[in-house]
Amino acid sequence: MFRSRSHVRWALPLTLGLTSLALTVPVASAAPAKSTPVRDDFNGDGYADLAVGAPNGTVGGQSGAGFVTVMYGGPHGLSTTRRTNLSRATTGVPGSAVKGQAFGSQLSKGDLDGDGYADLVVGSSSTRDGAVVVWGGPHGLSGGRSIPATSTQTADFDGDGRLDLAVFRAGFAPGDDPIGTTGTIWKGPLKRTGVPAAKTPLDPGHLKYIDVRDGDTGDINGDHRADLVVTEYCGDGSYCSTLYLSGPTGLKRVTDQHPEGDGAVAVGDVNGDGYDDLLTGSENDSSVSVMYGRAGGLGGPGTWATFSQDSPGVPGSREEDDRFGASIAVGDLTGDGIDDVAVGVPGENEMGVVNVLRGSRAGLTGTGAQSIGQNTEGVPGTAEKYDAFGAAVRLLDTDGNGRADLAADAPWEDNGNGAVWVLRGGPSGVVTDDVLSFGGKAVGAPYSKAAFGAELK
Image 1: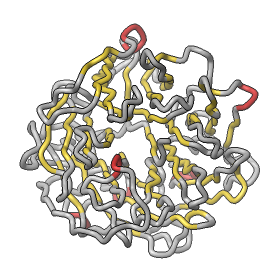
Image 2: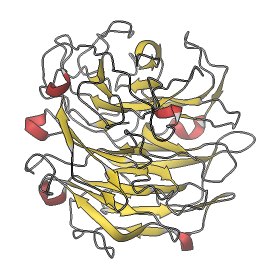
Image 3: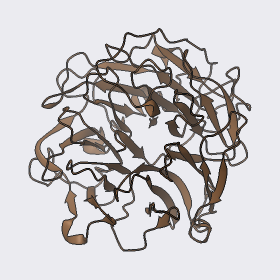
Image 4: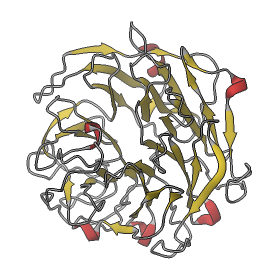
């Protein structure tokens, strides 16, 4: 099962900032109460780590070059003192910082080389400069290898126990028509020379007509092979998504009609039946559709459910421009073995909130749902117009207690500097004691107009 993942369609204008990046080696942590999947653990201490993209950051005097801050988990969760800042100007990371590169606009992670440490793949908006794999190790992330991609997804697509890499090299259309994407599945393990065990083209007949942006993975059909969903720019100002189900002959595109949405996608088991479920967001409609997995793929339309702020128990009310579903994260907040869902609503009251919905044996439900924002008691800061709190969300167990924690961003906080909030999970959902709030300045990064937190992984 693949849990605690999220997606947000990143579309931020590039702005200015100035400074260079510093590297901080993480402090070793005591052993966690529960094991953490290696796909989330860069330094092998047993705690999940959080990667924070700041694609607008200025690096080496290049505006919009972008950077990533990695926050290392520990027995007390995240801390601004245990982190690594990475950019194209970091020693060992290949390439150069280039204006408008947007390094960190898309992220994926997992143990690609099979050494027991998760690696981080940092995408960009430059087809020329591509992406970088930064290697995990006992002291955290360091070094790297360039790969020809703008975005990637990591998962075991063929069920052999080794992590594979879905590599997408997509255009960034300036007008109505997509430029097109080339997609390839790189079979793991990936050598540190950047060479995979094998390469297989993915759906060239479809991908050449769309621009892939992001996505998610999980086992929807229960065959112990990962399935893949990608979000896309589809033309005429519209966004959509495509689902690929795994099988003995590889990934095959699902052509049956299902809610594609124009917002986020996420995959996780929200009804605890052992099959991962597909969630797609519709920003224009301010809603999220849930399609439950089963043997053979998704259940039929009669099994689908749609949630909005008009659904019973969900806080707020459905309004134009709320953008409910702009970001979605799936993970077990309560520790009951069933995934819960965080939904970003960055347009709520022009300030933004995150709605948290509970998973149950009967499926996703609004019962016990929560609304979290900067006006919530215990949450630092003040909600202000255009902060876009909840534009990106992530659920990840950073303190090893068996319950996911909620990370949420506000990319326009402090006039576009951006900030991230991390709230603990508890038996009844998100709790607001001991909230960690930080921006680029707190982690020694080039914070000015950086849109810090625009991508969370």
